[in-house]
View (spheres, rainbow, N blue to C red):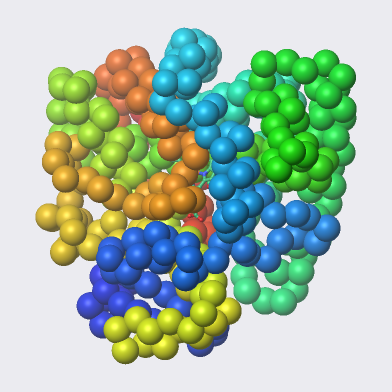
Length: 373
Ligand code: HEM
């Protein structure tokens, strides 16, 4: 992947992919520009049948109105409230691993953590966590191959899961309407846009987005982060001795092994980009994973350096759609990683470890990360 990005940055940084019928951008400046210029590029992606668009796939003014409803809940200050709860969860998940020789950092820890946290914030019972995980995984999944059959069968599966999930949320929404709580779903239900409350299908789409956007991404941040420390174990030892490096290691993971590798937009008009003509309506993909390795922006871009000074990466996007959950993801990683290191200071990768990467062009992470402790 990273070799391909490098080649594309050198040979064809603005590339039209005939097969996908979409433009690919590989340079930092171009990807940043794509994400920032919301007046030139639309986020209105096609949706699943019968679905309304959520925040992530809306343009202003609707995007601005919906974002204002949830912004406050995700500020670093507001999230401080969740710190003790997340800390307790981290401790509990790790307590459950006592006495083992090998633990799977992803399956046993980084996978359950974010889904329990978001369930709490939304105000849904976390006994239903297995269902959420199943729904959120399938909804972000890409087809195993690009054959019409594979695409069609995944779509059918997604629609079935979505139906199940919406029925579940309808019940929760009805309960909270009758009996509002302090949680985020209650906030969304009571919010007004242009003097009117949101329709049920809009509330459902909101719940679906909040549930799905942060799970796999945060799992992969923690998994990729621990892998970056262990791949060259001297980095693990250094961070263990100097815990002040952990925030830097988290930012460096976001840059070096970005959980979201690409984001798309659609041209709102004909656009000239250094000799290339992007036509109105065409899809344009910004390769965040390549931008974050662009040597003209990051010194020694292919080196993982937890002490890196300038690290303005694009892992959470840029501009009006900048990741709502970035402070939450950072907080979860900042509580999880030091605790993992403290508990298992002898942790190392097993010899002959066969890595199992997630199969996807857009999501980057591992399915499992067994370590000897
Ligand atoms: C948007 C990445 C965690 C909720 C985004 C975008 C990126 C991103 C790249 C921009 C999409 C675009 O421009 O089209 C990540 C990564 C995460 C993470 C790498 C973890 C390491 C979370 C969490 C939540 C979340 C924990 C939980 C609430 C959202 C939402 C948006 C978004 C709601 C849409 C914002 C908007 O359109 O205004 N995320 N995300 N994300 N993210 Fe995250």
